[in-house]
Image (cartoon, rainbow, N blue to C red; front, side, top):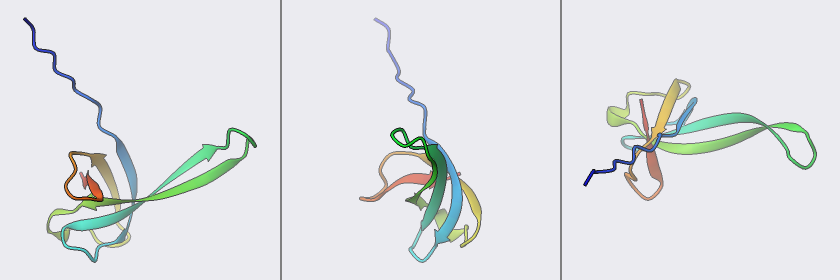
Length: 81
């Protein structure tokens, strides 16, 4: 009997750190340029993600890449690469 390993692809986003006031956490603003399906209009969609930032190495204004991981806390399920 073979073992089937499900290796799901992790989500990765790139964005800018907008807050680093929490311990080991940074808030990353991710912007996407998408087309509205109904009105055919292009618009910028912004979303803020809380990401694990070990030792608070990243500061406000830094460009970072985040990837999904197991939930670290209630709102935090991304980490900075």
